[in-house]
Structures are given as structure tokens and as C-alpha cells.
Length: 166
Image (cartoon, rainbow, N blue to C red):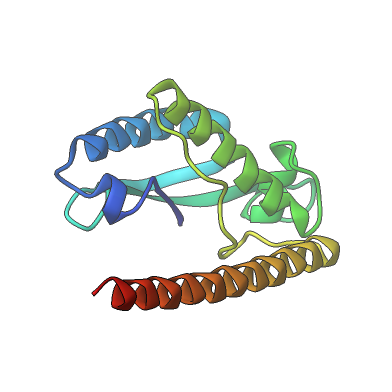
């Protein structure tokens, strides 16, 4: 299953004008999915409009072709290879990034900017990428702590000034 959504309940909640735009983006994304992914046999595709945000569930069977044994098999690695994403553990990651780029371009055409995908099932980092992300997370947490300390100090200073004014 491939799950696709745009935004959160805070910015594209069902029933809002932005949700209508997201719905159109998801529809366009789905229309081109089979053509972009000829080795994925889609057996179900559903857009949910009854939850927090519009989102799309795409269920497919990955099809790989072989010279020996069964000629056609359920094989995601082979399907990805045949569709040009290479071999190995990063093939699925390359596919997911390409699909995100397609969605990003559709959204951009509708005036929506989407963020990069977060790590999820099937999306993996190399050891080097993971280390870089961990370093960035630590740096941001330290920066956040510093800003919170400064905010607390400023609030205390404001309270002190308020008491002097009274």
C-alpha cells in the first residue's frame, strides 16, 4: 500500500477550501500513477474524505519478469529495477522520492508548497544521511533550548518591569 496525503488537519482539514485543492492534487497524482509505475498492478485506489485530511490509499501488486521459473512474479525489488530505480535497498527510497517530486510539482501548479517526506516505512537513510540528520536534530534541539531560556528570561524581565510600573 502507498499512502499519500497533503498537509495536516490544521492546514488542509476536510471541509476547508485548502482540502478541496488537496483533493484535486491527489486526484491528478492518482491519474498518472499507473503510467509512471507500469510494473505496479493497481487493484484498489481510494481517496478518504471522511477523516482529518484528504488522503489516498493506493494498493498494488508489484510485478517482476523473470527468464527462469515463473515468468511473472510478485516481486517489488524486480519491479523497481525494471522501472529504472536500480537494485538494492535504496531502490525503494529512489522510487518514493520520485513519487514525492511528482506530487510536489502537481501541488506547486495548484499554488501549494509541500514539505519533504519524513522517514516512514520503506523510506530509509544511508548511515551517513542518518548521522547528518541526527546532528541537525541535536543542533536544533540545543537552539530551541537556548531560545526557550531567553524567552523565560525576557518574561521574568517583563514581569519585573510590570511590578515597577504598578
